[in-house]
Image 1 (cartoon, rainbow, N blue to C red):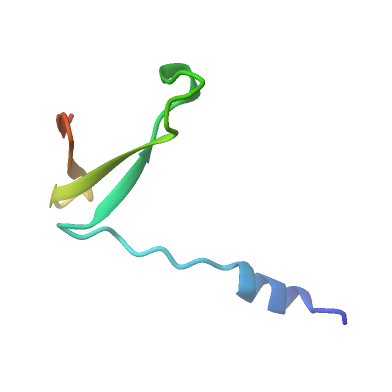
Image 2: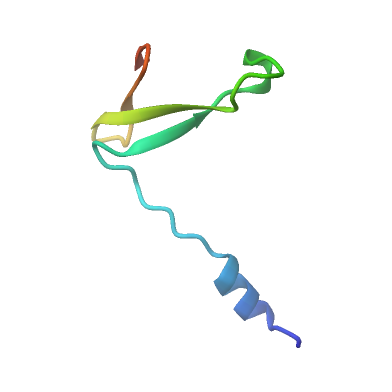
Length: 65
């Protein structure tokens, strides 16, 4: 079965919506900031979003600057 390029593009296209207040998010940690056994992401909650789509995110230890 041969698929056309158009069909493959439609399948691979991912629509990502902007985060809303109250959404849970995963924030990736750079490789240099974590040890071998540390998790790859930090889980947080969106508290606020300003007019420039900059988010204020709270994690277990406080608010991320």
